[in-house]
Image 1 (cartoon, one colour):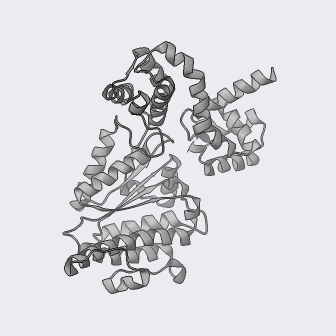
Image 2 (cartoon, one colour):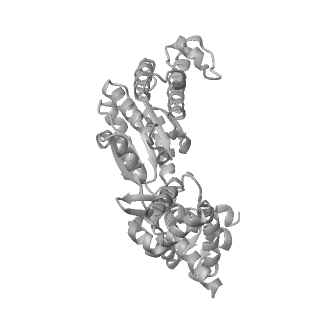
Image 3 (cartoon, helix red, strand yellow):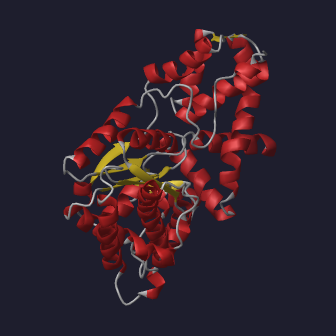
Length: 399
């Protein structure tokens, strides 16, 4: 077996790494949250952090914990189209009725001793006591009231299956893409409906994952959101955990990196999980050596950065228009986090109104987020480094 065949690293979207280092606290927090809900204390969970920090990986592990502890779960990845109330309502109700019908069908199958091949169609669900009424057919009622009714009514089905499951967990990823924009208020409606259902004893748990601006979106939707959620920031790994994420997989694979190589990886990636995986994978794939020396690392370093730029950064940068790219490059010259609007305006010579429009478009493209009032940060780890490399190449080409 070649060294490449033993490569333990798996850079990708939501792929669980060989060693999930530094996440014991958040996994323990989620497990406790399930137990607390079972004891009658309704709480939900919000995971937030930059791209490449492993939020989607955590949701995959949450899935396993739910199954082990006897909780039913529904998963969905969101995007901007769910800002429309009708689209949002249909998605949530489909998840809710699919979960309720799954339980009912399992119980019925046990009674008649037959395998269940597929879920019933919506119009057939009423026979089993499951409520499903598309939102577009009842626009005379507010979405929040619509969700309250369906959450409470369908809990009756789930409650009858207490011997099968404890409750229902919604695992919702990319949830930062959903926000309230008049006349659509999907977040306020969801939070209001969920809070009502939980107060009446319905064991639903909402777990949402997304970029840091998700916190602002949720707080603007309902002022009491902090009393409904446990907040967990998913960031870069500390030095010990980052080292563990590199050393343990290669040791099991019979591969060795010189200490100087490991230090360089930790320094350049700053402990961000995706980049740790990328660096390790690239070195093994391109060197195909059981022992990687620092001189080897230096030989492939330029090619590694070029590959990283192509595979992770370049496509995202190209989503931006010329004016938006100018703003990104101006931000890069100023800093990585909490860059002031006034400083960006001076650097890129844009008037305030135009600049705000551009910044909002960059937020929608998930390239930056509003860190606090009048300050913006990059949504991608190491994105500033990429932009500075672009600026440096432009100067060299110009020269």
